[in-house]
Length: 210
Image (cartoon, rainbow, N blue to C red; front, top):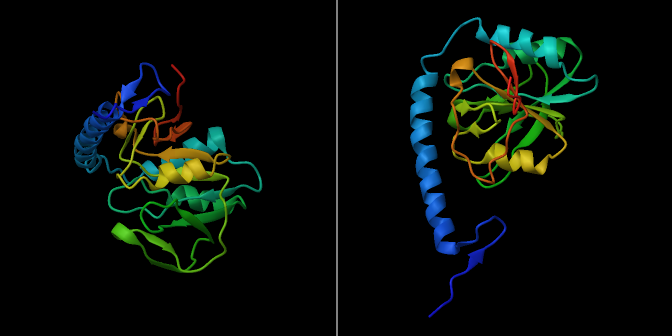
């Protein structure tokens, strides 16, 4: 009889089979939350929301001079970060956009300026057709849902979790409609938390009870 393999980094210790079963439950919870969050986000569109978000973030948490900010090109009904990106560029800050690598790898970023050439990316997004590779200081992060503890519900590819783990010094800011907030996003120990969430209503400092 083979002895069970125990994982004891957390208390209490759990067997490998228990850990696998727990992960199955977590992935099922995430899948259900994604389905609900996608449907809900489609109802939240507001034409002035991106501009209000930009104003709220720049009023309270403007990036420092010289910072490189990685935005994203919105797909579908994601909150549009382009008004914020244009405002950042007008302040003289350098911009970048992500390029999606093969599945299982972190994102890479290319320098980009408004009006720069783009090429089609996966799932309806766009990415720079050219530009130097850069390591951003700030990342604007799209999401399906968030909570006040900084948990982020993504699309299931794990790109941003791997990217944030590979860029520990970068500041990640979730970009969302206020209505995308959930009481608690299902998350595991490998899911990176966000320190800030910017919405059209406010900038949320995650973990702040206020």
